[in-house]
Length: 323
Image (cartoon, rainbow, N blue to C red):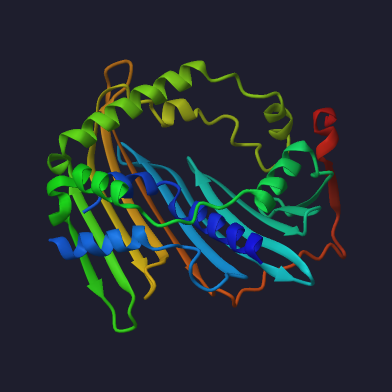
């Protein structure tokens, strides 16, 4: 049960807050709104009832210079069914006008089905119990999850970094005890300590990209699948320019919905960044996303039924040999 709770909490956090967690910590907080925000951070996410199942929904949009580059919507169901821990989910995205739809079904540790709904093609992935998967399962079973609340030193550091931004936080209290916490920050409101941290993070990111290895050859083989055909001609580097000069966060808006126990149920975020690329051309990039957790302990993942379908086998152990 403990393992399942960890997986649900981690999966929910990843599906709902991947893009905006760093922003939330960096740009925290009239102090009622800020106090509500800190109460959320202090809440022990593992202190409530064990989570056996949940549904996670999310969406994400990337806009560059007013043009939508990527729009994605996804949903996932996690929980126990038939004595095994199962996951099912759908992903629909449009990348530079090219639309793709896919589904995933996972049953236990060794049954994974992928469905290319765009082309009505079905795949079963076998032999996933490789060394990496084993390491992941070992970590899940044995490592202690860091479920402690924020301590006094961390709280003091957060207060220092936030500074006068406490007035940028607001909270709306609902009749059922839940709250909606909103932070809205413009470029002029960002304090110097945070600007310095952003500059340092940007420099480190550029250095990491310069040292990044070339893409693995597996991508060439994976791109042969019909799902990826039509996407190979899209120049992502041109559509998503790397900002290297005068990089600035123009606007951040983060809205979090928490229940009566201060546990996050949903997140909506907007991030707008400006800057120049290596050629000195100015760009403006906007990121918008949202995630929501629902049907806690009332979700049943969907099961894949291969009957009557032509299912191609993908052997993960011999993936390099695929033609």
